[in-house]
Amino acid sequence: MGFPCLLVDDDGWVMPCADDNELQGLTEPDFIDDIVAAFDSSARPLELHLVGKGQVIALRPTGVPRPDELAAHAQAYFHRWTDREVPAAAQPALTCVAEIAAAVHDTPVRRRRRS
Image 1 (cartoon, rainbow, N blue to C red):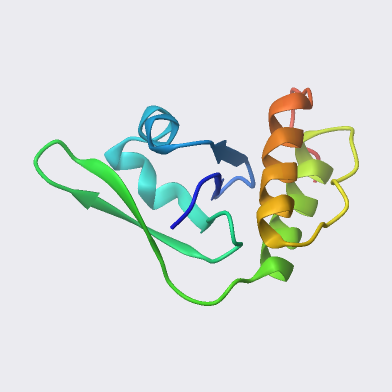
Image 2 (cartoon, rainbow, N blue to C red):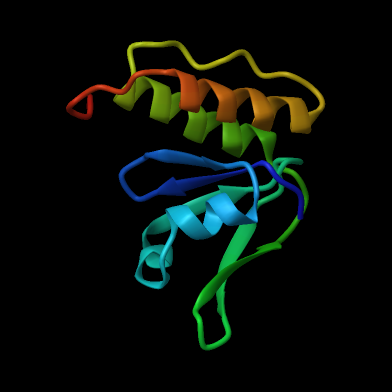
């Protein structure tokens, strides 16, 4: 599992995590049920797990890269939550995930979700 990673919640919000510290800061144990998709730096899907008494969030890759699925989530996020077009897909996947993460960080969001 490599960083950066992207988490997608049930409202279509995309949350980039540059490293494990940022992942732990953005998430909490009750929050993992709201995550509908997650992708590592290679666009592989991730499962979120709670580990230990401290309820640390751990990520585990679950299969082969799914860049099309990642692109669909990114497209939905930028359409619903921003006034910007989604960044063009780039290869390799690491570049794509990093580009999407940077765009999410750098793009102002709308006050209300677009349908």
